[in-house]
Image 1 (cartoon, rainbow, N blue to C red):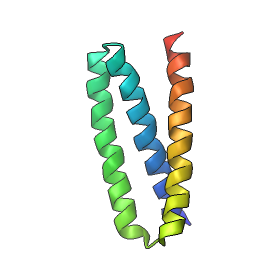
Image 2 (tube, one colour):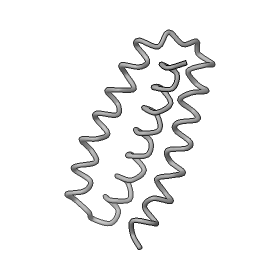
Image 3 (cartoon, rainbow, N blue to C red):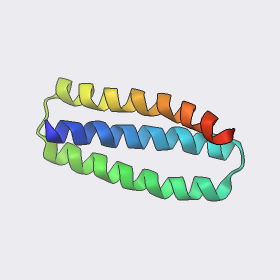
Image 4 (cartoon, rainbow, N blue to C red):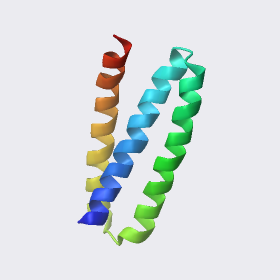
Length: 85
């Protein structure tokens, strides 16, 4: 359960940051995009570590990662709109 949650949080972080970085690049926020790129690297490392140590079955992994990813991209859109105000 704990490793599944780590997979979920890692997927959320990766996809959230990728969504935010896409918006930053589009709006020529170069420094913000560079900083977020480092954070993406950290989130992907956490995801890789979690997958290696998880011992999750395919369906369980897809469920945890899918929930994290779809929540991450959705919240990144709302956060960017809020940040832009």
